[in-house]
Image (cartoon, rainbow, N blue to C red; front, side, top):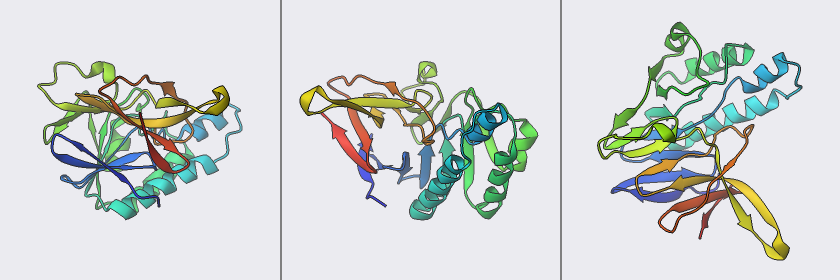
Length: 218
């Protein structure tokens, strides 16, 4: 695995992984967003031939990140799942049984519409609105990150991306981590997702994810 990059926020150490997640060292916590598990099954159910391999690769990347960082807790900043239960959700439940020692906290996103009993069976603690810990807040939609008592906010929802210009007027776009003065936006963990292009302000820090490597955007 390509080495993670250290980014410090308010004297806390956050290790950014090119596999689209963050390890919070002080809290031994893995932070990620927009996994959209079950999305490929949802598309196939509606006649769109998306291969199951996409889901399997996303789940395997999560397993690898847990194995590498060894977190005691996972905070999913919304859209852990994509829609109603399907066969892919059953696979998730089987996987969850093997990693019962890791707490999972889901900050509910707009796609997280499974029943309370399903989350309970999966040993997932569900939070509606904002989850706070250690001076930081976690909310799915950055538009909802207002009046949160000086917390530094981590959010998802937007699937942020950045344009990088090359020679000959070439321009490519890549998923990215976005850090502003008071908030950060995580890339979608799922590779089966679009991008919303963000514009860098002078005080922002952005890391593009390019070929399994994190590239600071100046």
